[in-house]
Length: 399
Image (cartoon, rainbow, N blue to C red; front, top):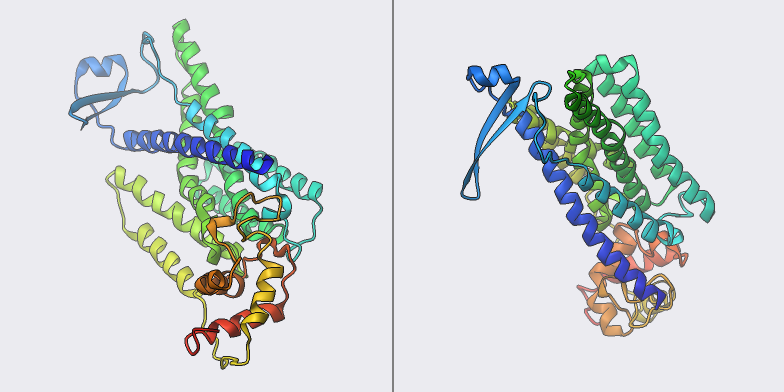
């Protein structure tokens, strides 16, 4: 019953996380677009009111007129809408999921003894340290003199993010490393909102309410962090969806794949932000496409040239499956972390095993991601036997 309740919590919180994330990213992308499409109104009264630019748009059968003030209006309107709870809800639900899935079942989803034999407390402490430490390192960088030098700042930030990806992949299983990479960047994003953007906006609103001129530095600082957030967005989204694609996180060079695709994601945002400004160059999107295609080519599975071993008996394969896989992939799993067979895949009968031969080979031989975390200690000889059996199937479907 405990596992069943955890499954429902996982489902509901994941749903909330998904919806909140759409709202946060949607509003973030919209305001980046809005800022980059502002045009002078050309009206003297707007200039006198301090309007810095405006956008006209049409959507859903209506016309919209948005104006941005250079600092603040002379009189604050009521109500004044804030955009913060989308970010907070996304992060809170995401952290809840991280604890529920990756920390509560760390021996399944986080710790991989073949990478580093960490104890449960050590793994959780290291993971939490990366999440908290990532924000402090980034924030110190943003407060340093480097922030005045865009290219140097970007180079140092790229180096630090690359070290983050590499370090996580040296400590945790690929699946856990990738998700924590996303959590570190996501935490930086929401901390930008909580510690920099919203406090700055509150000071601006308070100054305007007193009739004082708000400090424009607050707005500039918030804008800078908001721009950083938009470049982090696609790498975070990749990290959050990567657990469905073992060819990335289970690869020998998973850290390099993570860095490459994150760079590609940031370049895609560079292109769209520039496009919104009317300054679009195809170079960033072309480089991003080349990076992704190069990664896809380099990590493509290579077909073994070794001849198939026609002496492999199905009973030998069945014995391996029973010992190494069936504790999770069964109608009634015996592993406490799984109340039902993962992905609905069961190996209770010979027919079920034969029908899933492609998936078995893909997961145990090609990507080597199963058994997850190698909890059941499958050996290299057993993987080789499954490989040999799979390659005989075209010759003898009954095998």
